[in-house]
Image (tube, rainbow, N blue to C red; front, side):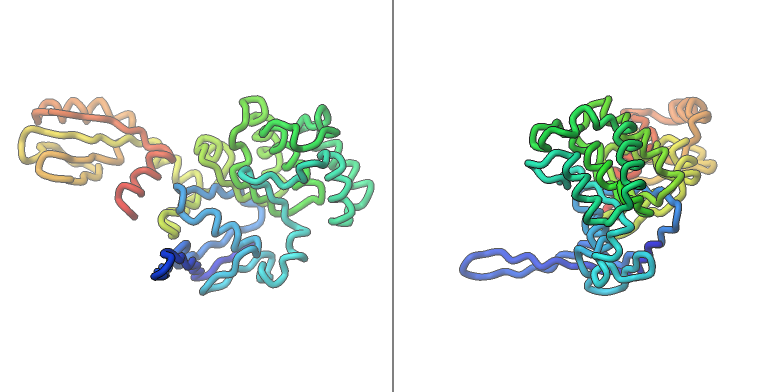
Length: 310
């Protein structure tokens, strides 16, 4: 469905008024990624990791400097109008609906733009409006709606034409608990019907919804794993320890030990059920000056990657 092969994307930044300085920034580097029909992908990364650039390449908004991007077997930038008939998009940072038009009027306009059959349109409109609880405000101008209402209205608009690919970029940003739960429940249902590419800084949402995680760091794919693999990693903890001695006295077993200096160590991949045993061993064999325990979750994995400058 989506194939990126050896994709690179650079931006040129100009600075200076009299003496112009031109700098080339690598937004994406050597991206190889295949997304199959029916997958729900969590696209994760810190700000500046390259998530938005990757989405814009898939949607045909940007052209890669090198490599190829295919969506439904076609190059997005060359066939954007045709391909978008089978794609639904929600950008949490930039609602799609027109400011001074009501959602209901916007939906009627979308019916004509996408040439949606009247019976299908009415069926989808009322089904998703009920699911997303949009009917209470769909006659009001978009500018009068709360952020959560706008996002729910946007998602409904993205679903009217029965897309087979749904791209959700920060769809729950700024939402209250009720709006967020309403949207997440519908997305769980949609997983059975469409391919979903989901990005969010709320990593608990990503973990709950997605079956595979693609983590970007500094423009590169550094982790691409199924949920089952990531779940095993999350079932472990890490220990950061500072000792008084110059050498850590500890039986490593199957744990990964990283030495920052003679006194600071990080012990990783510790099963939670073995944590008590490991702590007892550390305290018996060493003079501990400082010790902290970190749970391995998606946020911890991201922080480790950034700290290691991977």
